[in-house]
Image (tube, rainbow over all chains, first blue to last red; front, side):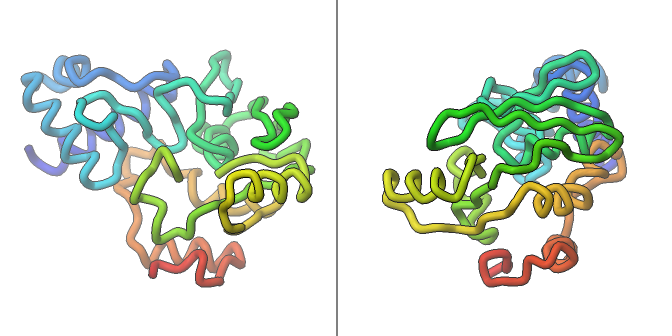
Length: 148
Length: 71
């Protein structure tokens, strides 16, 4: 598969996430690009290998396309009439930045369970009294992404 | 990366999970870092970043300790 098609698939996945809050299945991507399912699955594997997005282990289902999560999490972002799920605290801020839009974000304190509600208006973050803890140093982030 | 309501809540979580403290950013600091990290993520021209580009983003956000290094 040529590089242009590969990166066009990456762009399609992100656009699909932005427009629906879900990633496309590989057969949907195959239809969109006139590929066989095997070719689309192979493209997903290659983009996973390049850290463009990340598959559920042992499958061709997209789990994470940072900042978006394909599975429900406690990090919710409401924007553009949709609810997106983020992978972590940082990605909760990342979704409105990636979408270039206002948003309301609902999450919880990892220790107390207290709600943490944030809002983005006109590019400014409101509700800024919480902290974010990065457990692992940057060099270890990609060793085990769900844990990170 | 997890949210904590307060420094006290973070300390309790670290003790409960018996893990060492990593790096802590206040939300305004993280919001600043988020801009260069994510603003071009939906662009068709985004093909990932080199380690040098990542390190430059951390540096511009004032994150220069070993924690943020490439190792």
